[in-house]
Image 1 (tube, one colour):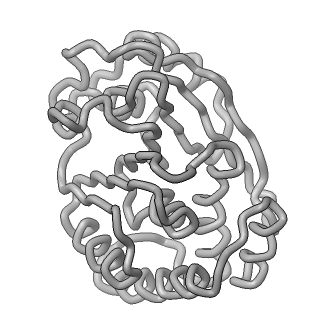
Image 2 (cartoon, rainbow, N blue to C red; image 1 turned 90 degrees about the horizontal axis):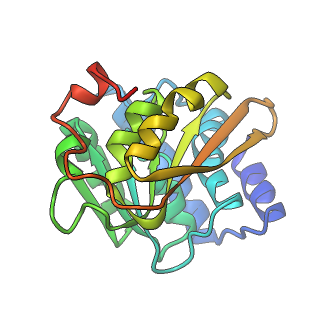
Amino acid sequence: MTPEEFKQLLEEKGIVLSDKQMAQFASYHQLLTEWNGKMNLTAITEEKEVYLKHFYDSVSLAFFEDFSSGRKICDVGSGAGFPSIPLKIVFPDLDVTIVDSLNKRIKFLTHLTKELELDGVSLYHDRAETFGRLNGIRGSFDFVTARAVARLNVLAELCLPLVKKDGYFLALKASKSDEEVQEAKKAIALLGGRIEAERSFELPVTQDERHIVVIQKKKETPNKYPRKPGLPNKQPIK
């Protein structure tokens, strides 16, 4: 997907990008490539692949959810900034918080947001397990996203404590897994959530599958969650 195709395909979805926004995406790709030579941020660096599998894939959340002004989103373990930074470029008024356990990624994102002149982005070097217990942070976000490879029952414990009541946890998955969703139902309910939908679509060009599990927060998460760092992954709620 070329930058021109990226712009055109988003326009067909009702998302019109300005010259400034297109320049921000171009700078994003350039900085991603430069920094990837110093640290392992992504295995995907070729321009057409980045625009399709990182930029378009990230913005595709907006085909299903409303990221209009005043919304607060927390991106857990975003790596090189996906999906939150592409969404921030497209929706400049979006209030973005990113938490990542690797400080080198936070350094990259600090440089990136400064170079792209993105205001309203807060970056935290922390574990999701401890971040989700902080006063003023816990239960404060309209949306929490995770594009991580952890199973859904693990992600639910890391992400649902951060979601405010009636807000949403959006889990981005490369493939559909009914077994994984079934496995996570008890954890999701225990943590105050309810599976509302599973959105499925294909990326243009490659027709790669993409799935978004939409979980609404219906009640407050019990205070004991999230548990200590490492425990959700070692002993998932079953």
